[in-house]
Amino acid sequence: MNHPVLLKAEKLIRVGDIVGAEAALVSLVESEGDDALVVALDDFPAKDLLAVLRDFDSSRESVVNLLVSPEKFARAIVLEQRYGDRSHERLHGMINSVVFRAGGDPGEFLEAIGEIEGGSETLADYFCERAEAIEHFFRTATFDFFADADEGTDELSDEERLDLLSDSDANRPFLNHSEVNDHDWMELAWTLRYQHPEIFREVLLILRARARAEEGQAAGVAQPSSAEQRPPAGQEEESAL
Image (cartoon, rainbow, N blue to C red; front, side, top):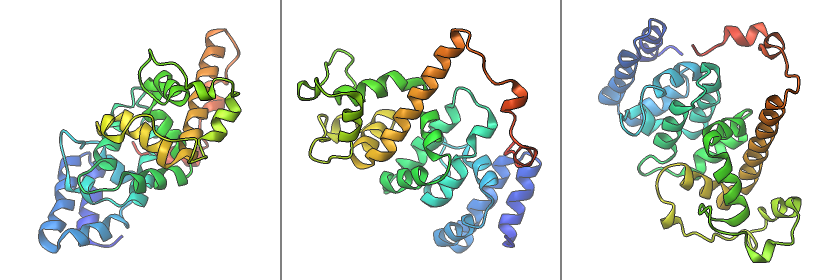
């Protein structure tokens, strides 16, 4: 990374001036065009890109959000867990802003996130407060909690239901895309289920595993100590903070 604008942006991030760093990156668009920033962002450290993305969402847009590539966004977004944001509010805002950006293809971003290590866990973080709704959507294909499971799948085991996600004939939308076109969690869940069912399945299983772990913790099952949960020293040194 030797482009002057990138070096300037990195230095500004180091001193905590995220707004200044974003302005430096945007200046590249103004001087050399959109394509120049797209290429430059591929050389920008993922942790620094994340620092910029965290300060901007659909309510406070940035050219960076509009031009970052799916692969680079995926490499950056999986680092969000290092911030320890239990509410995942920033993660939610970033994903909505970038994945559903104007003129973009949500599927390209979701595929890139699903393919990278830690990507499915990141999507599970995004849905963490909607786990019950995602489970209901899996069983009924709707987000209406008053809806019952599809009569045609009533007799199926859970494993059989999971397997049917990859069957395009069986896994057909009950809701039209227009009914969930909110550029938010419902549209993301719908897109995953019907366009990327393997990722949807993996995210669902992660949410279930977390729920079981929380139930075990509430029941007094021994959990790993803080020392056992601490990442290796090398990983701590790479913290995005």
